[in-house]
Image 1 (cartoon, rainbow, N blue to C red):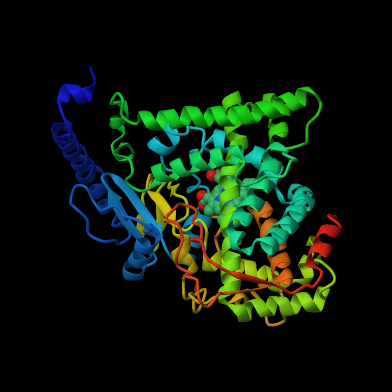
Image 2: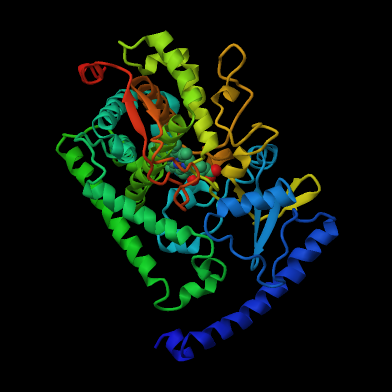
Length: 507
Ligand code: HEM
């Protein structure tokens, strides 16, 4: 007999839970949190009033808007409370530097995520792994395969895929967002598993990984599962069984993908990849089979969706800001003319391309609310304390709109990233790849993807809006990594023999 059936239907269960919660949260609040900060004369950062016991209401859909409004009202750092959880929200650049960069060691932790990590990911999701030896070991392995000098090795493969992206946009402009997803999936499948056959976004394994990413996204929504606020709920039989099922299925998927590489390795017929690196070094790295499978799968989960979304926003910006696009094209024409295809070797002479990418990262940050860090000890910021155990959210969207650092923040102005003599400024930064010790390990691979695709697409096409189908630049998905909602763009070729030039030579 389950606890629920013993207790009857849901209403009495809620009453029992409510009573337990009232007691426990009130004890913690009055006997632990309040006296501690009163004694030290430091208070939590300001924030909106909430229920005396349950605290603030969940942010609701498109939470980045809610958080940004709070920052406009209460200041650069605000605090919220959900039951006994304290969440500090950072919405301005300098505060992010002061708290997440300067205290990177003390903010390297992740909050405990019972539903999304412990249950749905079997505790193995890299992004949610808490601070300690295990994440250090994982990041070392990822870094070995994704650090800048190793990322150089993928450039040729990225170039080949980027040219295919341009040809796809040429032949079927209406599918440009799908082509971006194909590009990103293909690059990441090659890095993760050494896949050599062209990847299509409709490939079953790509579809399967995306299915589990979407299910994870739903679990990650604030307030999606009460168990994250009230951990004892996980022991109720039958509760969250669906999450356990997803975990088993996802684990089986990653294990099957790794088994393919394991067999190739045994037959000596294998392309080097992150999976072969992990398998060959399994003993030294001390990963279990399950951990290894998840780790290779993690690259796809973290790197495919994000890159595709960023490419979509590049197209959106080009279509909506013709003058910014024309500046890049003037430089492309001057440096390359229209007979030579841009390549990675041209990067230093094309700062306008880099500036366009940097501005797109800022204008439409893909990881829009950032991913939560956790304070491992009290952090004092101005007259406030971010207490040990608090979750810290650096809201990328709000930080990107800090008017002191990015004047006219709503405008798309790549020139803000350039010095008067046209070089990339080294005194301006944005955090689109996150913060401190948990910064994105795939950022070099991602930057290379964004540079080469932007250079190629703006060299190949004049991108514009169709006046009969205007683009809504604020329409995106309500997900942890946002995608632009489908939009129409016109890709008018600038190069007369585009197909011939792109299919000529992959070097
Ligand atoms: C434009 C593309 C990308 C964006 C915007 C992006 C953004 C991010 C962000 C915001 C984080 C969390 C940082 C934090 O906690 O503060 C992250 C983590 C991560 N990213 Fe990326 N990423 C991108 C591409 C990639 C690629 C291509 C890969 C792999 C090939 C990758 C692998 C990872 C991994 C493994 C983590 C987890 C790191 C950890 O929790 O310690 N990402 N990324």
